[in-house]
Amino acid sequence: MAKPPAGSSLLFGALADSGRIKQRKNGSYRMVLKGVDEIDWFTDRPDRVEGTWKPQKLISQWESFFETSEPNAQASFKVGEERELITFEMFKPKFNNKKQRLSFKIDAGIINNRESDLVTGLKGKALDEVTLFIDDALVDDGLYSCDLTIAGLSDAYLEDANLTDANLTDARLDGAYLNYANLTRAELSDAYLKNATLTNANLNYANLTRAELSDADLTRANLSYALLKDAYLFGANLTGANLTYATLHGAALTGEYMPYENLNEANLPGANLTGANLTYATLNGADLTNAIWGNTICPDGTLNSGTSPCTAEQLNLA
Image (cartoon, rainbow, N blue to C red; front, side, top):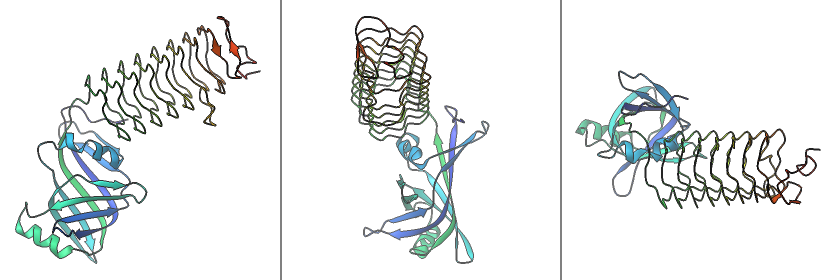
């Protein structure tokens, strides 16, 4: 997956099926674009790297990209049979995912009077085949080693984010989109990650003690050597996850509240399952080589006292 190089100059483009310029009661203008499903990004010379994002990702990083001033932008579109081009200052967008609608305040007067008159003349007219170009943002080094203690990041779009060594103790990340995020050695004790998407995320050596991960999607996540002591994983999807030498002491991994197969094909060699609750969990194809057992509640609900592993029958594999 292409990723913008740190320190590069980043430009953005988007296509929309249609649009309209509306004037607000306070006199300001707003552009509404329909049919926007992705944002194209590309780097300025000499990097020449390109990729696509969901609109939510650009919006979630808007303040960091345009910290000192709002960007200039251009929109090209057809009005009837004529093609028009306007240049304006663009403010942080909003996105309606259901309607695939991107909307944002524009200020053409800051460019020149001609642009301002163009916007006024286009007010309320149907705009077709819209192309949007945004110039230009500086990519920093991500959130490496940052302190986000008790941060409110519910529903945040953090795909590919570099959160290596980040302190996210007690952070609210419920519903956050952390697909492919790098959370190596991140401090996530007592973090609230209910319904978070962590597919393919790297949580190697992360501390998730008492973390709330109910209904989280951890498909193919790397949790090797992660500390998941007393973590809540009710209904979490850990299909194909790497839990090699992870500590799951006292973790609740029951699948009671979700119908999908939450530990199928998971890698658990050397994982510490002492006191873990695996009631209703499915482990078809899971690798449990040298896993550590002790007072573990097996998938069939029986308490496996001592250090003997759950039997194939108790694992519902018979």
